[in-house]
Image (cartoon, rainbow, N blue to C red; front, side, top):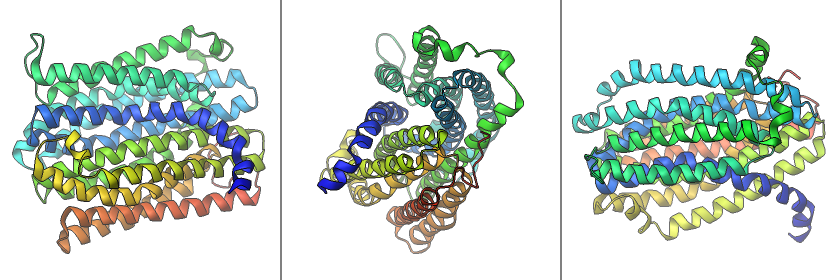
Length: 459
């Protein structure tokens, strides 16, 4: 173990320096959901908590589509920065910003004209649907400023500046929590808004984050050499397609996974409101650890992109393995925490004892899949940094939609194992994705190819 530690120690230091701020920043996306769930659970009641579960299961798909497309910028920035091509980084930012604003508008329209109608036909409780609709509308509107913020965030992270987005995310989450309590409960003369209140607080928070992140980039001396080429005339079809060639498959990867979990939430919603609320509590906690692990995966993508850009395959592999080590240690700790405090953690979100009892049992299952959830997201990050996105996209589809969700349906609904059976299927999907992605990484990294055959980058 000492020899292994000494071998990877420099890479641990590099990875952690990048990863820790990204972990905190990425956790900010889920922290918004967690704070909203806590506020709704304690101040709005069990029906509103079930409504939050329905909304989150529907909203997460367009959310990860938008975030996934924005992630297409990071490896391209990392690769060009590795080559010291600052001008190209600025031109890529111009194209990504326009692309992500348009993506946010399209996703909002899709939710407004599609999902708002679909929610009436999902066999959910009418009381839950009534609470869910206004909340979903406000969250969908917040997508546009969120994707603007994420454009700037991916640009800075691709250049190795990860601390600023973390600080903005943390402050934004504090603002979101304060406003959420004020709006939901009705304080300081504001009328009680119920679940709509957390929708308004999230929208305001994300608008402020986008403004502050943009102000930081355009005023900081760190980015002056990059922004010389940031202009409307830099927008062209080729660069936009290059971002999409990575971003679109990444969006599909996240969509296959998140939509499977969203589908699981809808399956649980057909079982009962108590089960649905317990599922929401547990998946919210699991989502936090997942987003933190995805920060490690993002750091892996950045370093892989740097090494890939200069053709350093030896250090690429060593750096990637170090990130696998880091995520295994981190997710082991969260698994122990879930198992040890399973009877206490659900009380953070709700005071309904029936919900707490079911959630406590689900946390045991969640503890088991922590390791696989972490390793699969690092595998995706490493391969994304190398521009290898096609085969990983197929792997995620296979793992979650061919194996995970169907098995969850059979066990949970047909074999009457209820919410537990649905979660067993999700675990099997994560195990499958984790193993296949690691095999893919080994094939690519050991082959020594200068460019993966499935790469979408145009170097």
